[in-house]
Amino acid sequence: MNDFFLQELEKLRKNDEQYEAYLCSDNCVVQAGPGSGKTATLTMKIIKLLHEDIISPRGLACLTFNNEAVREFKNRLRLLGYTPKQNVFLGTLHSFCLSSVIRPFAKLFINNFPDTIRIASQNIQNKFLQKAMDKHGITEKTYVFRPRMDRYRRTFIDRDKEFWTKDDDCAYVISIYEELLRSNSYFDFDDLILIALHLINSYPFVRKCISARYPWFVIDEYQDLGYPLHRIVLNLLEKTDSKIFAVGDPDQSIYGFAGANPKYLAELSDRSDVKPIRLRLNYRCGQHIINGAERVLDLDEPRNYRSNRGDRDVGEIYFYECPKGLRDQIDTIVKGILPEVLEEGYEPKDIAILYLDRNDAKVITEILDENEIQYSGERDQRYPRTPFTRWLEEIAQWSCGQRGKKGIQFRGLWAVWFKMLKDAQHLVCENKLSAIKDLFVNISSLGNNPNMSLHDWLNRLDERLNLKGLLSKRKQYPEELESFSRLIDSTQTHEPLENSTLEDFAGCGPNTNRISLTTLHSSKGLQYDVVIIPGLEEGRIPRYNATTADAIREARRVFYVAFTRARYLVYLLYSGSYENAYGRSFKKGPSRFVTELEDLLGVED
Image (cartoon, rainbow, N blue to C red; front, side):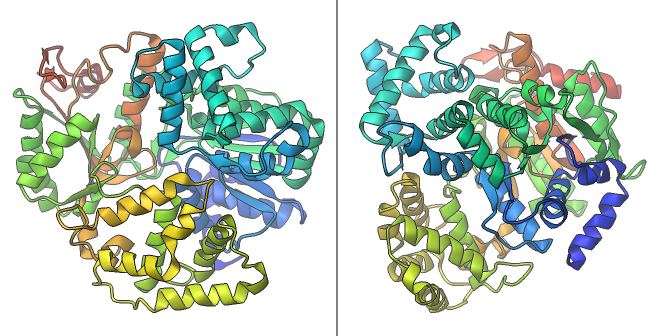
């Protein structure tokens, strides 16, 4: 155990709920509210299990929601002294299903299962979906029908049951779509989970092997991972000796359109063989912000979250009515709010503008550009964030001198490189040392000039490592070649990254101190000192077509997630009316969430 682990352990001991979760030796569900230190609890639990509870060669599987979470956990575990091990899986649910279930077992139990698993790119999926829709006479656009199909496919997974044909259109199109994928030797990501579930549910041998290898499963963001994962977990709980340590928050379940539902975490927590623990101490938000957030949720059962700051820095919530519409709101942000918070000493990188949709983003970026205000975010047309482009960012960080225990370790870069070579069927096992040397020499030969043009650096790296050639042979990851090409294109003349340098790409240059722009949904997992949310009109949040109780509750959770990104200041802007994408005006007043907060705080019209 290193010094950092001992320091973190001492912090856990001061929080009774976190320490109880850390010590728990039974199945456990940790309901972790915003800013409650769930990542610290989860990663410390992993270290404890590996050092004290699990006897090698058995290990554990840690499943996360997305690759960004994987990256965060790996960095945190490295600081705690963890080094990658063969008996530990740390990755997304999709990658677990592929590497730990489908590859070892599918050919044993599924007739004519292909030797090579190819993941269909988004373009290929859309092509097959269009053919399936055409065959059934559905005239909707694929981007309109796809969310409906995906949600149905992830919810109704027992196809031998009568309710599978509850929606005949979806059931038929799914069958044709999957047939087209299979006949062309393709799978999509939903296939991976559904096939893995079939193998685990149907074959005791598969369950026995998985349980023998992984006596513990640690699962992050359980509320977002959907019904198929819930079924996998129930199979493991009820039919094997594996134990579950799940972390999540039903109040932050915001992906209903993708099949997520907070009831699955609640069902797991209510089981008699599972110990529930709630983390109530918030290390991020001031108490006023916590109280406001809880009001928005409109809960029957109060959460009673409390700030670790107590009565200090309780946070402030400000309301701005801008009657002339969204542009009036953004002008108020640019000419009033931003100068004020910057004058108070907040850095641009500590400020976020959270918006509802791409139409709002267009207005926001236009006005920020007009006023020469720099910004960054996942919707600013920079480049796609994929595991491969993240790996390139890490090479850039290593090249800029961010190395060692608190930086990028070369063995991590090498591990990804080795997997790329294997996936491209390059025979490197016999000459591994030479391949490591080649990677080191090629990266080092580019120099460590932080001011080098990103365009030049990427092209030289591609030339030395033949990255495009390797990516074109990785049939399991078709999107990576496209993402790399888009990254290079974004550095061309008149493109967003035209003037970017190596240190900008690495995240350590002066241009990284920018205001963040992101959607309400994508803000999940982030935190800022100052959060600004424009566009808060009734009919937009909640949306005009959110007519069911479930839809209203999900809209509340989306707003709650955005609201609780703030440490100190929240600014809420509205006009009382809005225009849709076609120029039609609607005057329904401010969002009910705004008026509820104003009533709580005693704000007068």
